[in-house]
Amino acid sequence: MFYKNILYSTLPLFITIVLFVFVGNYGIGRVRDLQSQISQAKSDKIALTEKLNILQTVSATVADSSLAAASALPGKNSVLVMRAQLKSLAGHDSVVLSNLKSDLGSSDISGLSKVGLTFNVAGSRTAIIVFLKDIENTAPVSLVDKITFSENAGGSLATVSVKSFWAAFPKILPSLTEPITDLTADEKSTLEKISALSQPPSFGTSVSTEASGSAGRSNPFLP
Image 1 (spheres, rainbow, N blue to C red):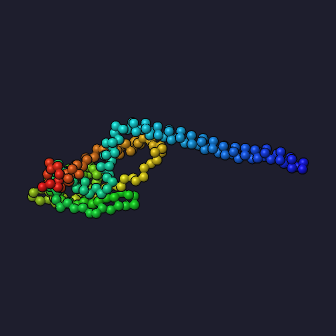
Image 2: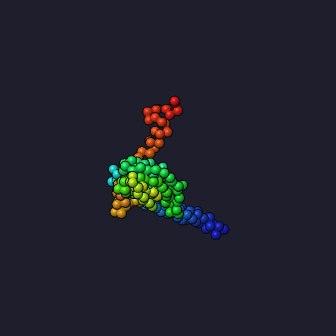
Image 3: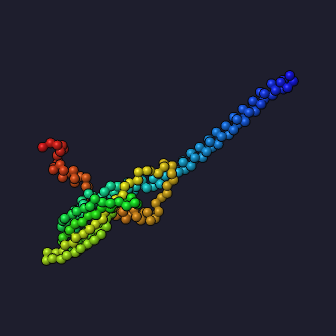
């Protein structure tokens, strides 16, 4: 009977101690979680502030730079744009472009894709050389791969092979809170070279105009 009384008297104290230990451990865990969340929030705030500062610094030029980069290395097959660019350059450099052909294009494991174009170009030898140099200074990025010259009484004729490049745009964007840094000196130099490339003509506008048959027609389905 004596031991039962002791047991009954100490049981509430024992239960209180157990609950205190359990609740204490739970509370400590919650405090640690909150501290971790606060630390992460502070880190995210620093990263977002750095991003905002960089974006505010480059906001005046980022739009033009991004368009120039997308024009230099398009996200899809560049053959149509390059064909239009070749025709535009030929008219500018006073040469005659003919027999323009292209293949279906190919890709490698790096994600870089290319399409081959072949054509004949006639004119003075000097004008043809200027035309070929202009190809490598125009967007999209292209490379004169092969040239065969022939001469006749009327001037020069060149059979040319060109490779034009493109690459699919990234499909996964970086995390919003992932820190970013400013462009390196090499990256800025590359961006300057890309921005200096001759931009292609307004290809979409020229196609829609040709398809409608009249630039002034508001509804192309009307006679």
